[in-house]
Image (cartoon, rainbow over the protein chains, first blue to last red):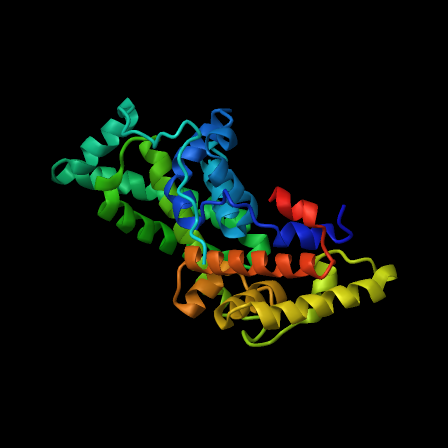
Length: 73
Length: 225
């Protein structure tokens, strides 16, 4: 157990993380899987890892998911 | 610098070009069609993009301190630029999702880019400042353990100075110490989100390794990552 969990969480990197370009290229596919209730994080673990770690891409994911779910209406 | 892995689905496949659903096929047919039909489809698409961009700016608005007419202006600009990007890239749509999901993605991206640019209209802190005092609050350090985390912060600071490249240090200082949004830093440095993220990713990995070596963080946790 670490004494500094928030700092540890921030500094810890996931080797599966695919980076912003690949995650954003696939975002529309990933979002539709999530919206349909399919376990997208199991099919695309590298994208899931990235969306957990990257604030801006996580925001884009949340925004597109809200759009697909009709929350913009 | 290690490269990021290319994501494929866990069965190893890439996403195949899919058969279009009827609604997406209709969008493509109308957008590729002759004069009036094309214009009508563009107007319909623009209306959808404006609606999505406005909702997205409103969703993020409280955190980015944008209200009123400025919020609407930003949404309209994002929708207009998204429409241009879509018409330019429509040949790249392969049908892996509905057309509208693919199109909405561009509106979301444009909102992000415009909010990044907007940050520099009212910057809170100079880019070259180093606000180390905000770290205890950011990482929830307990005031009762101040003597311990002062040691930790000193070790972190030494690692920032000794282990990071000048560019990694610049990115770490801006994002972590000065709370500059990553998309705003992209604008300031004339870079890309992917490049800045990768720089911060490498910085995080190096700093964690240094703190593990110095005994401040647990090695077992590192090995799981």
